[in-house]
Each structure stands twice: as structure tokens, then as C-alpha cells.
Length: 302
Image (cartoon, rainbow, N blue to C red; front, side):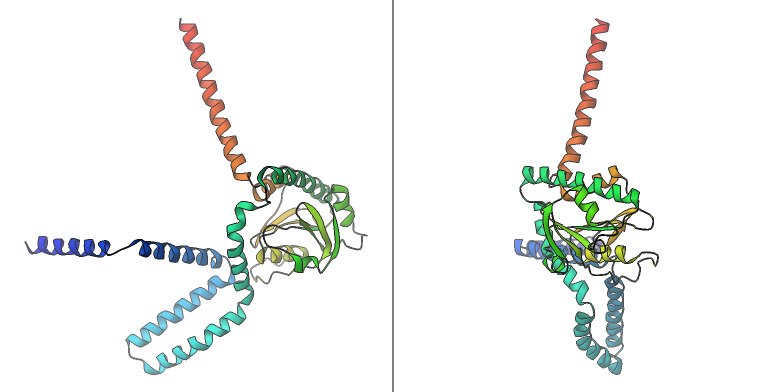
């Protein structure tokens, strides 16, 4: 009986707690969960991840010292946290800036290149142009660094180079990166499907985990992708390998087709919808074949 009574008390207590939860409480929990998820997602593969582990360790150490009544240690840790918050803001200013830029760009992702149908057509033409130029430069081992601007505006980057404002053309892109051309060492910035500037300087990545064999061009591409949502294309001058940088991650060894698929997924507004439609078409095509085969069998049986 005591067990049943205690179980009923637990159930009634849980019911009382749940009955006191309102819609505002639910919204509050959802917002906090959303913020914690994005904080975890941001720090997971950055230097801030190691920082977070260190901060958690210090918090646990502080709680233990307070629980054990270690007054001297608690006093030191409390003062350390007061000064440490300001120090962390100063030391990790680039990471905090990147987090705010990513958070501000997140709501704009559905509008990657503006109006859906017209912009998708323009983006498809740009993708064909970039794939053609990049693959030609890869065969010739011509170094290239191309930044495709998206929701994060790169006005501070274009000011470091030479303004061009020309239609993206494979021959023009290859001429600008020709090793005797005066602008070949810098980066090209593409805005709204047009070559906006060339010879631009990009921020180098300070990530210590980047492999040492990567040169300045690749480090600049990774650094640009760390502080913006831009898509960066890189052609190695030594090997001719084609690489992409996005969200601080570098992927290499692209072919024409794989590069085209990557750019369609990142630049087309309806990139995800296109893949879904293809899958749906395949399913419908298979179902139509099954129906035809079934009708043929019925006709033969009759």
C-alpha cells in the first residue's frame, strides 16, 4: 500500500507540474534549446570547442570548491571569472564576430540569390561559366581564388582590390588569373552573377589544425569562408587540384560534374527542390513501368 501511495503521489506531483506549464514556458524552452543548439553547432569544430571544455572544467572546479567550503579557492575562482569574461571577449573576438554574422545570415538562406525563377536561371549560367573556367585552369595548373558572395556583403574585401563590374565569362576569368596578369595573385569576388572585383586580399585562417602543406591561397579561401557565408573556389598552382571552402571546411579533388553539383546545391534557390523533383520523377517513372508491365501481363493472360 505504501508503494502504491508513493507512486500516486509522484504521479499527482508530475501532473501538478505539467498543469502549471503555459504556452510562454514552452516558447521559452524552445528558444533556449534553439540557442544552445546553434552555440554547440558553432563551437563543435572550432577553437572555441576546446575553450568551452576548459570553461566547463573551471565551473565544475568552482562548484566543488564551494561545496567543500574551500574559501580561498572559491575567492580566486570568482575573481578569475569576473576578469575572464572580458578576456574571452577580447581574445575570441573573431569567433564571436563570425557567430553573429552566421546568425544574421541564417534567416536569409531561403533567399540565396533573390527571385526564384529568374535568379535560378542566372545562377545556372554562372555555374556553367565557373565550372568551365575553373576546369580549364586546373588542366593548365593556373592558380585561382574565386569568392562567390551570398547574403554576407563583402564590401570591405572588394575595396582591397580593383573594381571591374563585368559579366562573368570563362575567357575573362582565365585572363584575370593568367600568371603574367597584374591581378592574378589576388582573389576574384563575384556579386549578383557578375565579376565585381579582382586582386582582392582575403583574411587568412588562423585555425591551428589546418595541415601545414596548404599554401596561402588555400588558407585565404578557408579564412574567407570562416567569416562569411561565401562559397570559395580554389585552384592549386602546384597540382591543379580544384578545392572548395565553405563554413571553414575545405574539400578537394573536384571534377567538372562534382563541382557543378556542389555549386547547384549551394547557389540555386531551388537546389534542394530540384533533387527532390528528380527523386519524385524516378519514383513515378518506376511506378509507370510497373503499371505498364502489369497491364501487359493482364493482356497476355487474357
